[in-house]
Length: 262
Image (cartoon, rainbow, N blue to C red):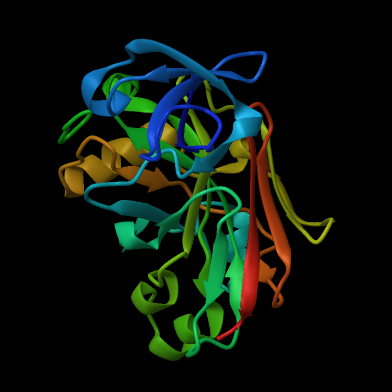
């Protein structure tokens, strides 16, 4: 299933509040009742078309976005380091989340804003100390993320919190795919029609089971929490008013524009 969250258009007859839906093969949308992570997938009988709605971030984490750093060897090398013995984790606030086609706002205090293409895991239930063999039991599905980073502030601060936590610095979308299975799929970042990042999910040093097991040993994961799994080499600046598209084969594309510098 591909689950979307959307704002109905004025000619859909579905009101103005955000809704959830199943995206069918013909781009029809079957509206579902409530948040599917909490209430399951129940069709209301109402339908509309993808062309008539505005896609929103498919999940708004009620708690946190957990991020994995230096999870691709080539990216660790370009950052001047080596792959760590254990996953490096940090947090982005849920207020950083935006959806497809929303604008990444360049903060006034930042001099350089970078893209980082990532696979995102959406957690479906409360869990703690999840063993690798049970990780699929707690995953609701997958989506795409851009771990936007104010690179100059990361270097200035010597740590990552401010650089990665600005509002709009965690685009997610375009949907949650509950059937996606991470493997050798290609992951790319395309900036103004030029491919900047090009890797495979199989190049992750810590795979999805290892990541969820490790993170859940550190903290309780809640329904709707998101874990983003690291980025391949090729990170770099997004100029003012540029367009960035993160794509994962079989999962879709996430496109956002960057504002003028604040």
